[in-house]
Length: 238
Image (cartoon, rainbow, N blue to C red; front, side, top):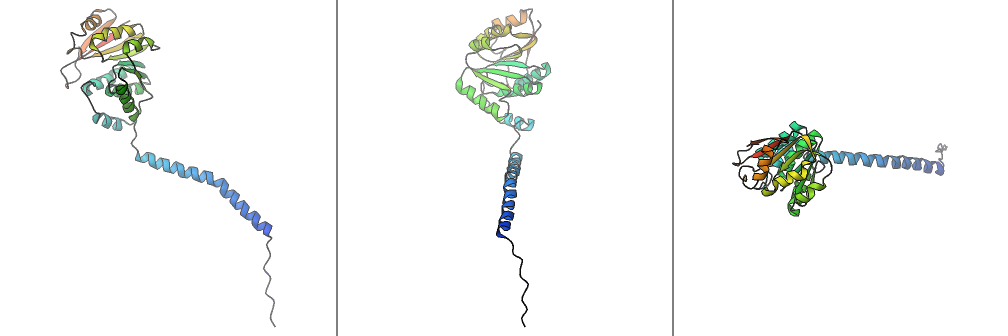
């Protein structure tokens, strides 16, 4: 006699479909979170492989490999500018004559540390574009603003007051640059002018003014051994 096998319980099709839909719903809710986690992990891995452009080690290496030209500020002078910015605690600076941005990078590091801003003026559009590129590559494009144009026309339009100035442009126009800014200079402002030994004759009126005016205390210094030249450093008394 053959016994009947126990019958398997029947599961309603509607129930199976419901369970499947529940699982799919859970997965659909998890998918965005899973994708986001994968994206975050990928970006973290990518970031770990990229150099930190705001790190001092990266910037130092970048400056060491900088395509320096004779028109750029020397390494020693650029370091002196950075020290002056930081020791002064300067918050709003102007550079007249950007060139390709070697000096602007160094001063920009100083202004980044003081929480300040630097506006640098370059008359040549291609050179200005090169400077912008260099500044962006070291993460200073939010600290340093490159303005294209003739400084004698740009300076009177700049808003606000200034506590640091670096002049390294047309030598016969140094006094004109200073005069264009003088009313906007805060007491205690530092004004640095480059090439004051080699080009002393071309800027004689400027040197005579900053050395004789009761508004300034001025000293000629030589910060770099890379060239037989110097800078004037003037402190605005009032």
